[in-house]
Length: 132
Image (tube, rainbow, N blue to C red; front, top):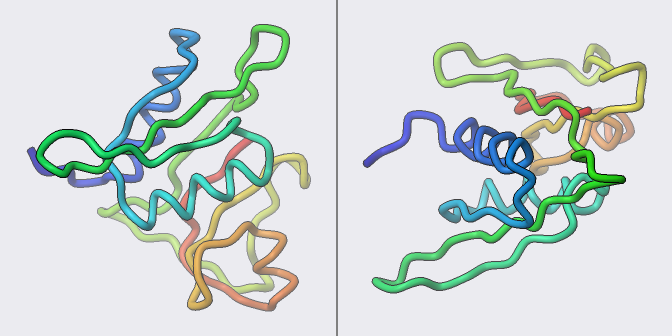
């Protein structure tokens, strides 16, 4: 089965896993997803992620979800730029998420980074998602 939007599928799996209070979830692996998960780990939205090799040489990512006092740390994770409608932004017009409490993840020419890093490096790019 081919996915039209693999990143959107990853966000849906994270949301569904948190609704069911799962400790961890599995998703198919890709370098772009690893970069997004690395940002989520550094910013403290997930505990950790691991690369697992399954049968038939399929590589999956196991994401350990994070909870605080029984509630998920990620309140909202929303895909902004979709395959049907790409959303780009200049460095000067990158939106702030919840007045700086949340973060936006951007795909820039220098790689995947948060909105604050992109503003600091004066880089614009495609707004992948926003997280709060």
